[in-house]
Length: 95
Length: 486
Image (cartoon, rainbow over all chains, first blue to last red):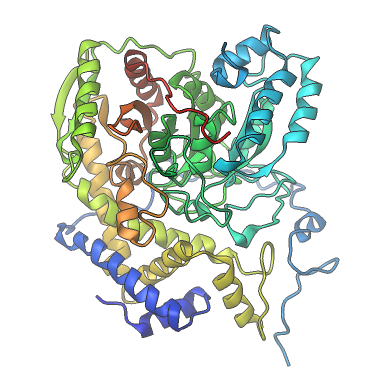
């Protein structure tokens, strides 16, 4: 499969990364080189092989459902690029 | 005379506990040296004054029960440190001060280590040369006629340990990010079994592959640090529920009877004779230590790197979705919310990070998921099966760590694939979740260090460490760079 300008535009949009002419040109070149490299996997016989998403063999650990005091709002809001006392502030989303 | 900063972590702590050296002297020795080593660009954030204050406090109250008491200790800037800037070497996180501490670094401070600062790395740990950092290149203390990369992504960590700017450090390894830079800088780097150390509070790259691990001056230091940072953590559901071990106390170079596998597929095309000779030297050493050598086959080795470059970007594209300019870090202006997101992510991330987000988004997108992501996961299974099969007949596997020694800054930046090939010998281990160590084994003709890698069974770090210790004691590697940057 080949990555075209339209593909780069589409995946940039999906990734929420602003795109422009120069970016698209560079990415077409780089992403096609990477895809060509990973296409080696087509040589591997994978019939009846179960996919492996994680090497962890234990069952997910459950914990007691207790209320703990952590992640205080005022501490967390300190890092937001634009804040008031109680909320995150973003550009206006309704007219 | 041996300077304080030249001591191993283990020896330094012994001398602090026996009051031969004070905590203040120890910290001052490292701080003075780090201040004179700005050219190497290892530090993104320096906490020297706080470190000196803490050391002064520690000096009067020596606590011999603490395993790292008084050790001056800088960490990779991928670990969240409470109230101290944590950037993952990205513009996106410039100025970000976490309100919590990562589990691994909490364990260091609980055992009495003393934070010196945060160390440079590739942006979001994506890179093999530390050249993707927003905060500039790190320089390797080893050089020929030009400045060389320290490897990556834990490049600042590797250079800092090699150049004696920290007594030891912790890095992270997703596809080789501890072992490859350790190999390039003549230091020791251990990637533990997946699940051995908590990932909580580490900036996430590829969550099914990321592991924190020690980067040290020698194998004994790695064993000591390993026992400090490992252990189950309720905050990381993938951290293993197994008992804490005391690796340093069980460390032995008596490895008689161990069966060691030599995988023929790791002798890759174009591998230099120097590296093959070093590998042979390693084989001779373990033979003379009474080990049995077995040629083994890991038939899917060549497919590990292509599978990795689907799986890791896929996980990264998901993990990095959180950087939206709303809750922390960098924000760019935009006429509406979507444009703000897009501009923030376009200007906040560097090129390699954007490349990987786009590849990851592509392989997960509708119509391509089966052809790429699912296929890569199936290949991952086959790679793990290869190791499972091999470990039925051997205890460890011995290979070189990297296909070359450190290269010049700028040499590989224009070609992502040639950069990715750096990790061809380290990536299979991450896909299989196994522990592996890189130890310095000798020099190439340009006097640059080269490493050997030992791979072990799941949760058998002890055998890996013992095997590495035996080789280290026999090789007796000595750093040979001059302090040319001072």
